[in-house]
Picture 1 (tube, rainbow, N blue to C red):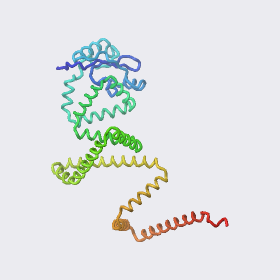
Picture 2: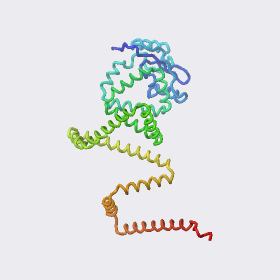
Picture 3: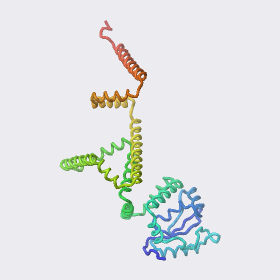
Length: 347
């Protein structure tokens, strides 16, 4: 059985809520934090520790070991402390029963990306259900506190390289939408103002002109892409199966639904921050702008569409309602005029 010789392994001990050692293990990376998700023999003392302390007490006995040395130290510790009923440990065997790093890597390589993604989602959901967001955030901060910046960069680079371009785009889009929804309209406008101020402070007039030219070119390229979009979609769909087209359609509808919900939340937040006068002013300006941008032919066509599905009685009731509203408005204006002081009242 081949074992890794890289000095990246450690031996750790888990304790229960009363400080009694209950498990000895070896691992690398975040392995010693994964026991809060266990649903086997460890569950009883882990659940008790999580309930009373919020986390499982643990220490690393030795670090920077090869896998062979880590197995040897783990075996010695288990024999020294003892497995129940001869000791407090709940380990299944003295050592060596679990798979080594090569076997785990081979098993992961034999699985599809969909299976690995499902397993990761299930583990994250279980962790969130058992521990909650605050415990997970605190654990991540604690795990990252001893990691250097270079190690974090290498870790993120490895994660990005393991993902497809489509997956990275999806993650970035979801993160951007979630950030925009959480920030709200005021913070987004403040971000835009800060970005504009930063650009103005750090660029010259010539650079800003060049950026404006690039923006115009970018808009022109977008227009050309839109113009050739249908043709491109037809060509792309010709090389796809019916299942692929159906899956793409589902993703597009899900994205549209997400955008609609995000826009609805954004509009509600914006409406909640406005007074009644501001809402009426916005509605009035919108109606004026719509009226100015609509030709007489479009207005007549819109009127025909609105009345095409109405009966004669419904049209009559609508006309009477409009007349009554106008009469009430005239009476209200007349009352306001009657209350004005006349110039000859003092005579």
